[in-house]
Length: 62
Ligand code: FES
View 1 (cartoon, rainbow, N blue to C red):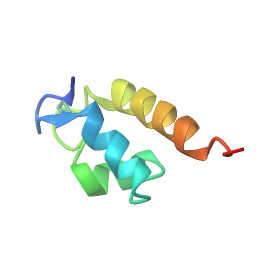
View 2: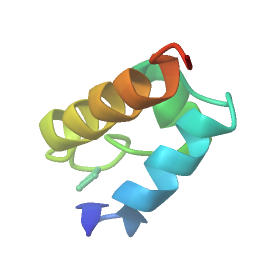
View 3: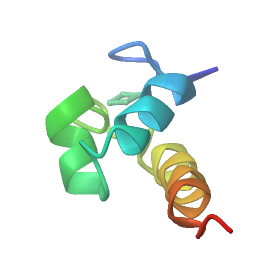
């Protein structure tokens, strides 16, 4: 699913960026993938995907 239409950034790309440790907040996500750098409309959905990805990657493994 496209999160940022302006730059064709998908939720998978955001998940991968978070999983690889490259991004852990919106500022880093913007630097890595460019989300919100054009029209800015993707901010809310990008934040949701980021939050979800962070919750999944930081869940302690047992
Ligand atoms: S949709 Fe992401 S900057 Fe426009």
